[in-house]
Image (cartoon, rainbow, N blue to C red):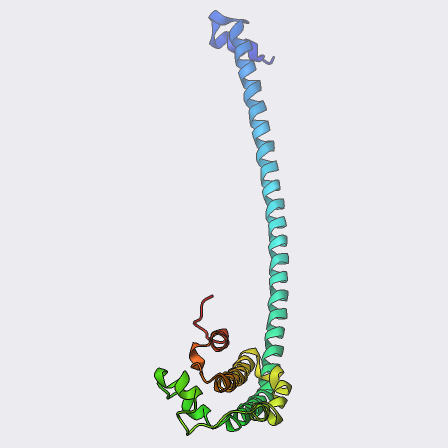
Length: 217
C-alpha cells in the first residue's frame, strides 16, 4: 500500500494533519516547479536569441567588410590611374612651362629700355623730374612699343595654360598686365609732364596683390 503525500505529512507533522500546511507546501512546490520551468524556457530562448543575434551580426560585419574592401579596391585603382596619368603628363607639363617662360622672356626683352631703370629711381626722381624729361636718358614710350611687348610669341601663351596650371598662368598674366600698365602710366605721365611711380598706382598694386600668396582681402 502506497502512502500519499498527505499521509506522509501527517506522520511527519501529526499536529497539522490534512491542514493548511499540506496546501501551503503543495502550493510552494508547484510555484517553484513553475518558476524553474519558466526560467529554463527563458534561458533556452535567450541562448537561441543570442545565437541568432551573433549570426546576424557576423553576417552584417562580413557585408560591411566586403563593402570596405570594394571601396578600398576602387580607391586604389583610382589612385593608380591618377598616378600613372600624372607621371605620363610630366614631360608635357615641363614643355608647357618652358614655352610659357619663353613667352615671358619675349615680353621682357621687348619692354621699353626705360623699364630697366624704373625700379632704381628715387621717389623724388619721378613726378615732374621724369615727366618733364629732365632725365634725358629716358626716351618716350610709344603705342607701338607697347604692342610689340605684348604681341608675337607672347600671344601664344594661352596655348600652354592648360598644362602649366592656373597659378603659373596667373603669374605670367600679372607680369604682362603690370608691364602694360607701367608703360601706359609712363606714356601718359610724359604727356602731362608728371610721371607717377608705378608702385604708387592703385592699378599696379591691385595686379601685384592678385597673385601675392600672403595678401589678405
